[in-house]
Amino acid sequence: MIERYSRKEIKGIWEEKNKYQIWLDIEIAAAEAMEKLKLIPKGVSSKIKKKAVINVEKIHKIESKVHHDVIAFLTSITEKVGSDGKFLHKGMTSSDVLDTCFNIQLLQSGKIILKDINQILKVLKNKSLKYKNTICIGRSHGIHAEPITFGLKLASFYEEFKRNKNRLEKAIDEISTCAISGAVGTFANIDPKVESYVAKKLNLKVEPISTQIIPRDRHAYYFSVLGIIAGSIERVAAEIRNLQRTEIHEVEEFFDKKQKGSSAMPHKKNPILSENLTGLSRMVRSYVMPALENISLWHERDISHSSVERNIGPDSTITLDFALNRLKNILKNMNIYPKKMLQNLNITKGLIYSQRVMIELTKHGFSREKAYRIVQKNAQRAWDNNISFYETLSKDSLINKKISNKDLSKMFDINYHTKRINLIYKRVFK
Image 1 (cartoon, rainbow, N blue to C red):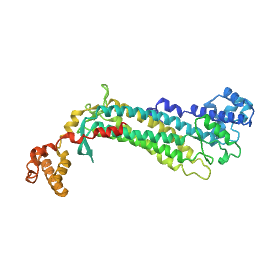
Image 2: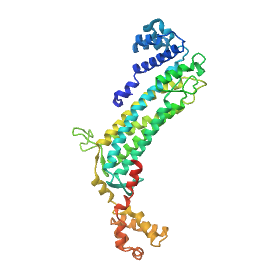
Image 3: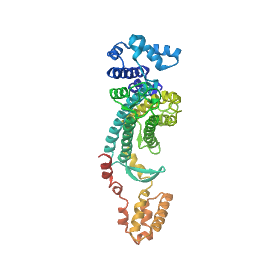
Image 4: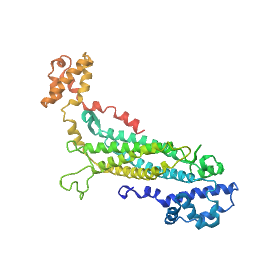
């Protein structure tokens, strides 16, 4: 992943030194188990732990000759630990190390992403409570529909990220398995107790049945969840981008005093951070399909998944971590304009109350079809002539026969649309 979209903590998980350290931890844990089972001499694991040195450049140099990363790693370690190195990797296959390591890296990355989501939930909750009663227009198809509050809009995002947190916790659990089962997964050359020991030592679960690899449906689930989270990021980003449009301008990304929006037009303040999140979200979602295609491998294993995972493992997690942190900062610092929200709400001069008027007409003896026609006709008249909806309704003879202007005016009460907000908030913020 390029530096521009990388944060140090999660990037470190995917650096080669950390990867090789996990490989070494797996090999040492396996050696400890074999000692307990009296399969190798006592004290081997402690000697290896003491003498082993990870030299990334040396491993790469050996790999350039042997064309096998795990063999290059083992050769490099053995050169430092001496004769005890012969007890490393006994009865194991490369995938035991590679797959268990990959799952650990996904687990470590997932925990960071969970922290990111928790921070977003905190910001969304605070903002939603602050703007709980800030009236704005709700839109469907981009067209004014009926009043909501800005807090409700944020509460919707909050609830979605709660689901994302739950999904990711399940995905992390799904991926937290260990396989030390040897060639084609039969334990022919290694005791299953070694696998159990390594799993416990590394805080993983035993993979119930592996072939020569851990089944890739687990990984497909994990990356699919990352894709869903990316979709949620874009949903929020798209809303901010739309609300920052000049014609709407209800919300605006924070703009630094020294910041410049356009090389050509000095007046511009562009929603570049939200637009960036849209692009990054596309990238994360694009990794889902390769993960799904990795499920189907030949027989007990092939390595067609390997090159895919070397890319999508670091790229998806690093990108998502960056995107979540950028979203958090946008939400935390964005400018919100309640007066503009109210101004926009009144653009249609009361047309947003059309449904309530229609419902009230049905209560006074009109069929729903007739009530709809009456309200629609008056709404169109008000829109075409740029006059208030109430004014056109109050002059309609059919309505005057059934409803007084005083009762009609009560149908234009904004509080009617916010009367159940407390119920919704109680559901969301239990």
